[in-house]
Image (cartoon, rainbow, N blue to C red; front, side, top):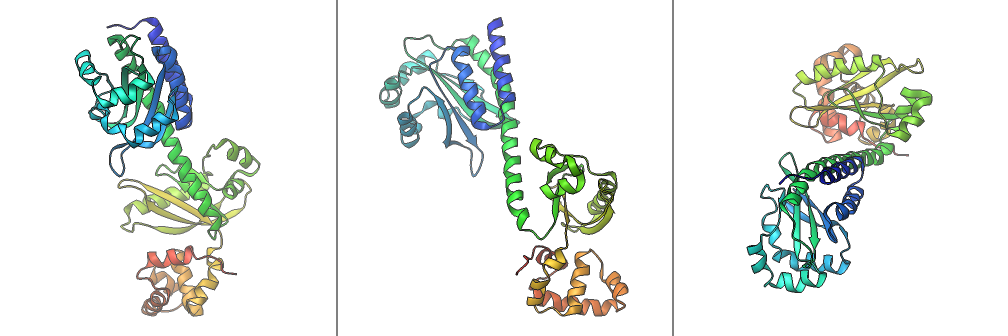
Length: 369
């Protein structure tokens, strides 16, 4: 059945709101408000669906309109097991409701008479919101017995609306994940022995920059970037160094390649020396983790407490700079064999088994005062 112009206007308006809202709670509340006039309903709810540790409705994450808290609690604790709509959730259907025959049998059961009827709920339309084959959420719309059933036209309208709401939800979920990652990085970075930190994606675009990094690279524009959350292109000199390192890291079998790069920061005209690392974030992509600061000086006390001699500390520092045994030997005027002997002693004292573990231990050692 074709939709009227009012239906199309409702779909466009709900889609606009879903795509403009930022938070998961906000988007659900605003969509539920629109549904009242768009579908002529009295009650509604909006449950999130989770994939982990197994596919399930998140009973702790629901937004609802004109439903008493008591009934939500009763549903979670007992009646959800009787809900016939739970059998179709996850069956790759966007919109579902009970037909007249199914409804006739349904009204004889405990779930209808003891749970729905006291809420004046008779007709129900459930909308499953999908994105890329995954169920994101389930939206329920309800009408009393004295009202009309949901029509075929309203089913089509709900199905068209679901695409826009799903897109808005997917965007809000992604934004939430990004904010959580930023919160974790912001919480961890102040305790790291570095002046500033930047994280780049595989396209060398910044996905995180600490406040100090913004000041160093943007100067007077740093405050505006922090307030708006806008990230910035790297200075060309630093980008060129990162590109060169990234290409080398892709060819490396080391899951966490690293090096020290030196360049002009492009803003204040001052040279910077940065430790850059390549960390595999998925099977086909890597993140570049750039840090600036005298990490070795700040971890010197920790190294001394490990019992490293002056020469061993010197070699450990050059390992952190990404030098190979031959290069260390040439720099310190000792043989490669001697470097290997020192390394075995360093590994034993630092309780590590390889270069990567050694770098991690040294790099992230706290400054003990």
